[in-house]
Image (cartoon, rainbow, N blue to C red; front, top):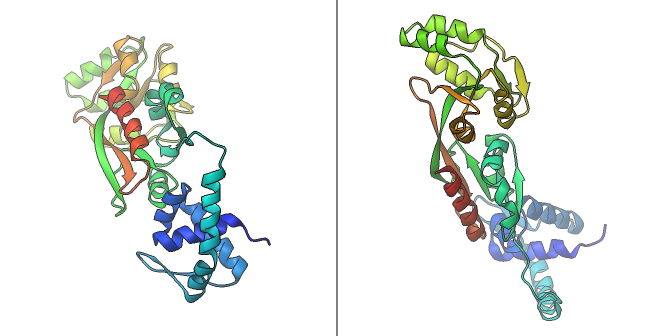
Amino acid sequence: MALNLEWLRTFKAIYEQGTLTQAAESLFISQPGVSLHLNSLEAFTGYKLFDRSAKRMVPTERGKILYNFVLEPLTKLETAEQTFSRSTRSERSTISVGMCFETFQYTLEEHISKLPFNLIIKFGDYHEMQHDLDKGVLDMIVTPHKGDEKNLEYQPFSKERIVMVGGPKQDTKPFHNFLRKKQLKEATGWLKEQLWYSTAADMEHMKRFWHINFGSNLEFKPNFIVPNISSIIRCLGCGTGLSIVPDFLCREEINAGKLKLVWEGAPLIENTLYFGTRKKTIYAKEIAQIKDIFLRQMN
């Protein structure tokens, strides 16, 4: 196994910055990448180079010796790179942002080509995204779930209301008649006879809406399972059927008459949406631009 120069650069950054997170920020790479470089260098040298404490990476005696040995040549190399680099323009920064697929489509998709930096979007489970944000894999997340991680902060910026929607040709008069007479048993019986749409990845909205409004667990399976909420909205627009979705994802279709707002529920079900970021980041300017797009699109 040959010695990799990047391992030494990373080692120097950890030694000088004191933590893996700060080293990653100074090198413009992910924290897992920093850990990988350090593990590879320790495997190459056969020595432990740092003692990992709760707050800092403390260099061992072998680590101190290695740092003193590589400091001067690495410094000269960095100076040579700056002096003889042919690049006259600054590199575009790259940030990684996590959110659900539908939120991306509704807010960021049409604006990506105009951003002055590179953007990587990750879709997935909210708790997994919070973990990736805490570890430095992601730089920002958009989530309805506020965590309690010490290194993260959550900024509320909007609310989503969970509502029942239907196709434009869906007859909802019987349902509203039952509600007006406070006949919930008859109302739920009528709902069960209708065609329902949901997604394979997330039925949480539907289960929660049903439990809060009708006081029971969901006792039937949707007729159609489609990839995402955007698919539900398009399918419902073709005629009849019902679904439970966040209102901001279908507001335009409802206003245009392509969807019918069937019922908002009683009580109303609302989620607060948060921007999740690390408290210390080198991408504050880029993150601010992403936030601005969300604020313009959703408020």
